[in-house]
Image (cartoon, rainbow, N blue to C red; front, side, top):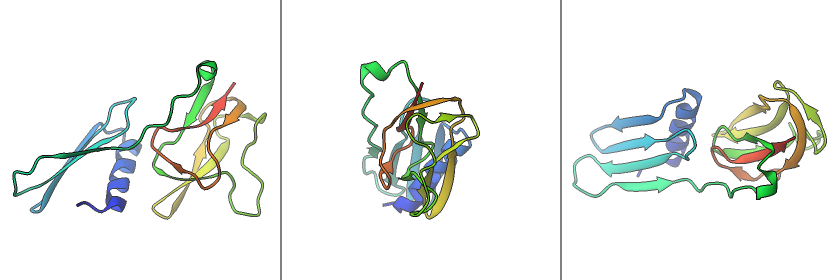
Length: 148
């Protein structure tokens, strides 16, 4: 079985480079990762030598927001990792409900594989809802904030 850390790194690289499919082969195993623009990655793995059936693993998708939130813009997680609302335990939160933000505003940190990634809003608006709590695990594409 492929190391989960390697798998997370492969998914992160796919997202960063806007790849839709990745095929890796070696003497022991074959790994295929595919994703669409609105899907979570699907990973298929099989031993290279045996004729065992492929195993498909899909990361759990975030629950859809209630219909009243459909008119709100979302800031989604660009990777799998751990969400942090502030730069360190003694600091104040990056953003709070009611804050006006711009595209370059850092809204949170997502830690993936011991790397702390600042996440920018990439859009303007007012924070209407924060959908995750400090220390929560987030999935690729999971909605973290809703903007008005």
